[in-house]
Structure formats: C-alpha cells, structure tokens
Length: 166
Length: 372
Image 1 (cartoon, rainbow over the protein chains, first blue to last red):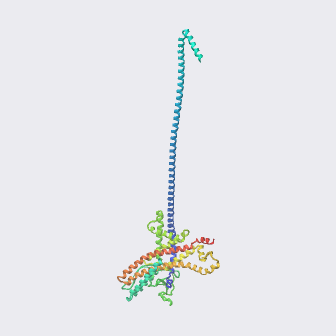
Image 2: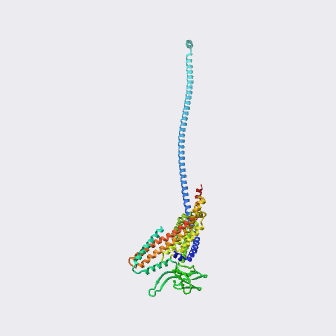
Image 3: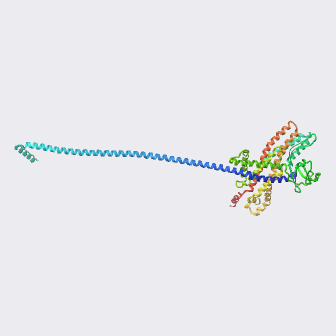
C-alpha cells in the first residue's frame, strides 16, 4: 500500500484527466454525435419502412377483401339477373300461350258465329225459295185444278169438310 | 467471471513461483531471479524514455538502450523543460536553469550539482529529496496521446462513412459499429434507461474504447502498462465520481440522505440514520474506488503473470522449461486479450450502473403506491 501511494504519479494523473476530457470532447463532437445520429436515423428509417410495408400489406388485404366482396356481389347480381330473366321468359311464354289460346278461342267463336249466321241466312234463303217454289207450284197446281168449275167446287167442299172436322 | 480468471491466474502464478523456487534451488540463479523481478517492476512503472530494447555489451559491460527520449516538464521555479536524454537513463544528473535533477527508480528528485540523495532513516528505500511536480510527457502519456489520436481517426472515419454511404458503415467501421450499438443498447439503455442514456453515451463510448485500446496496447511488445497504472485508473474513477454526483437527481440524493423515505416516523429514522447515512456516503466513494482498483489490479496482475512466465524461460534454460513457459505464456496472452476486453466492458458497465443510480426517478411511483 505504501509503495502504491509512493508510486502514484500525480503528473500522470493530471495528464490523464486533461487528455481524457479533451478526447471526450473531441470524440463527442466529431464522432459519437454523428455516429449515434446516423444510427438512429437509420433505425427510424428502417422502422418507418417496415411500418409502411405493413400498412401497404394491410391496404392490400383490404383491397383484396373489397375485390372479393365486389366479386361476390357481382356474382349474386348475375344470379339474380339470370333468375329474373328466366322468370320473365317463362312469364312471357305463359302470357303468349294464354294470349294465343284466347285469340284462337275468339277466332273459333267468331268463326262459329259467322258459320251460324251464314247457316241461318242460308236456311232463311232456302225457306224463302222453298216458299216461293211451293207458291209457284201451288199456283200452277191451283191453275190446273181450277181450270174447270167442277173441280173447283169439289175442292171447296173437301176443304170445308176438313174444316168442319177440325 | 473476471474474478474467476484473476483468481485462476493468481493461483497459476503462485504455483509457478513455487515451482521456480524449487527448480532454481541449489543452482545459484538468484541473480537472474532478482533481475527478472526488477525488470517486471520496472516494466509496470511509467518511464521517462520510450525504451524499446536494452542490451548489455558483454565485453565492456556497457548498457545500450534502443528507443527515443521524451520531454520532461517539471513545475519547479516556473517550468523546467528538457529532454529525458539528459538523464542518460538515470546515470547522469540533468541540469536546467541552474537546477539539478536526478532520475532515481523512475522518479525525478531535486538534488545538488553532485546528485546526492539523502535518505530518511525510517524509509531507507525512498530518498527524502524534494520531488517537483512532474508533468513530463512520459511513455504512458505518449500512449494515451497515440490511443486518443487513433480513436479520433477511427471514429471520425466511421462517422464520415455514414454520410458517404447512406448510413451504412464501411471498412473498419463495420467492426466497430456493432460494439457502439452494443454499448448503447445493452449497457447504456439497460442501466440508465431510455430517457436519460443519451447524456452519458459520449463518456461510456470514450471510456470503453480508451480502456480497451490501452489494454490491448499493453499486450503488444511495446511494453506499455497504461491501464495498469493506478494514477490512470484513479483519474478515470474521479471522472466517473464527478459525473455521477454532478448529474445526480433529487431522488438520488434523497436515497442517500433519506433512504427510508416517508415510511417511518422521524425519531425511528434518526436512530437508524446515524449508521445508515455514513454508510451511504462512504458508498459514494467506494464505488469509484472499486472501479479504480479493479482495472489497476487486473491489468497489473496480467502483466505480472505474463512477464513472470516469459522470465521463466530464462530461469529454466532447458528443453522442457522453455517450451513449457512459452506455451503457458501463450495461453495467458490469449486470456489477457479476453481480459483486456472484459475489463473495458466491466468498467463501462459499472460506470453506466452508477450513472443509472444517479439519474433514477422512478421511485416516485413507488412512494405514491405506499402512501395510499
């Protein structure tokens, strides 16, 4: 211990303090501050880069989810449209069928009515002709019959007889 | 962990020392042993020359030193500045403006023109001559300057490489950047907290790299032992102490002078505080003191072990002892490389821990909960 104290060099102690403090100040100004700042800048740079990458990834995921949703919507819409179209088609066919049958029925009815009226007309015409014909025939017969008086009288008598009987 | 290694190295050293004592017994190699011991002691001390090598001329017995002298600055009648080559490694007396100085065991004493040293009978080893304040640029100061310039150059280039390469480090910075980040994340933020760590970052980074680099320089053949010098670790500890206490928050001081808080009536506290407050105040000084001793002791121990093992080669001078010592010193060198990093880490870590105590503020919530 005594040797240690005796060997203690006060000059070296002073030099060490002075040189160390000088070194500390110089290094702080010219080395440590720029080094630590550069390292810190780099670290924050890396951190922000990582964060933005993470954000981009998240955005991408969101976008993909949106796309998925859009696709889903589009598919549903297409399905709905197809369904609607199919229904419309069926309805149109149905309607057309109904229309057609009703139209056909109507035409048939009209035709039937026309046939009936034609028939009626024909019958009435026939009737008229038959009446005319029979009148003519009767006229001729009557002319023939009533060419002599005897025959006329006989007829009247027979007619009267018939009348009496009625 | 570091304690374990220190204990291991010390046991190893003891084992080896007994082994050496046993081996050298009867062979008359006591001179070599004291020479090695002196050499190690000399190496552990600071020096006024930057000596790389010394050799003795076998014929003339002259000692040749290889290296370069360093400036000596003494505060004595103003400043006395001269080169340490004037001392001729302690062999001659240096004269400066009519004052005479002698270098004796690494320390400079003021003497007369003949260089007589007077001794106190109580301390026969230490001369009682006046020792002027020695502000010389010693070997340690040179190494601190070199380390400081190296640090400035290294980290300035790292700082610049960010600007050039778009916040990506290049070259050697790739190696140092993770260490800087480790100190920030696992030492500063972990101990001080997210809010206040920035204030202490320059100190923690500087002290870590400064101690680490100097520890590593200590392992080079340059033979410098800066962090194993108690004046250096003391200076660092003083800076930690001042930083801790000058940045201390109200809560920190409250913890020291009123550690029990409002949970106890004042008369109850008074009895306990007679003991508790002195302990807390003592703790303020013990913490940096432990920092100082830990770094000093670990680095010195490492150097002593390593140099003892290398010294063994010269003591054994045999085909078995040489390679054995070499292998052991190689293994210890590897451990020392690890210890160099570990001690720098521990110094930084504990400093951060003390700063964390000083800047704590979370106790408000704690007391709040208790009050309700």
